[in-house]
Image (cartoon, rainbow, N blue to C red; front, side, top):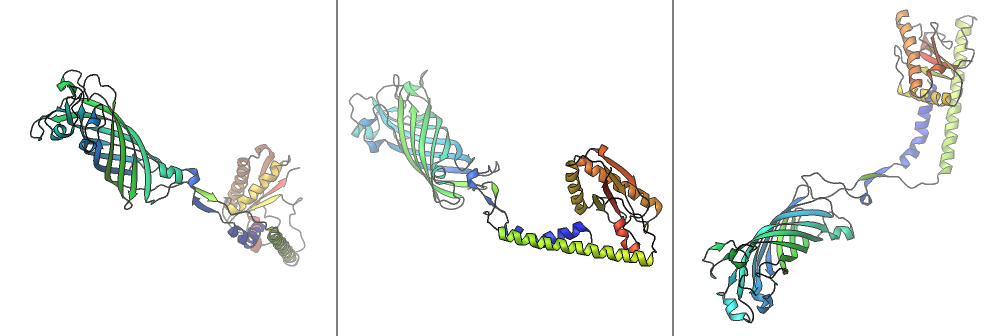
Length: 424
């Protein structure tokens, strides 16, 4: 048996329990952040409906309840991370209030609630018109930011801010039987501002009804560009609203953290290591004893069956011997470990080395064996050069005789090798 094989068996036998005791585990680490999902994941659609209240220049002269009007939103959006998302969509809202200018949008004097409840001091009539437009928000999940991301959490508080643009329409009859007109202030004359811009912010309360469905409570505050009360009114109109809705989430709805290795805690096992070292030393002693027995047997066979003529003897013990399977010239993985060790030694010395290629003469023929010797020695030289050894330090030769340690066909495997000695 080859030395390297015996050593590998011994190490595997005695060191395996220590390796298993220190097994590394791989777990997700939220401290590293979260991985972006695919583009088709984390999309959602939201539908909301509720009421809003117009709070512009003269609106306080009408009762609060008379100014409550319907509002609705329809959004499609995407979460890019557990904290950040966007949504865009369309919105509808009805505006009801009091006009302080004759050129106000949707100016009316035939509304019952205006006739009965409004204080007529300094006003020209009531307002009632619809705004239809597009809107977009940037979403930020406050709950995940403060408490950390948790899949399946029942409640999430999301703050948002955005902007919208709207077109104004009103009906010219109080009972709604008239025609809808697309006009702004001053009856649609030039500069009447039949389109308004707005900025908005709000708190979106999300309650999980299932993995893909959420119940929404949207508390929203809009600041609408003030052209709706007519000429000279270019401030901003406050428009708070509250809406209930549902959200449906498409594709993957959760997030994954990067997977990192977690090493077990270091344990002081000096006593165990000492015991393992003793076992390894005992194994090495047994290996040396087996080698001595093998050499004694081979010498006995040589002296009793092959005469007293000694075979060729190497002047110096090889630095290393690389063994090969029968008829092969490639370096096996186990023997490559020997090459690695030899390269480490050479890198720490300044000597030159002689590499000799061998092939046993008990198998094959001269043509095959000559090629094997040549390929084996050149393969080892190339491997050492690949590990940083200067090729000028490496001399090569082939020997057509059997290796000195080969005393018959039974020991022929010892002759299928490349020997490495210091070339002095």
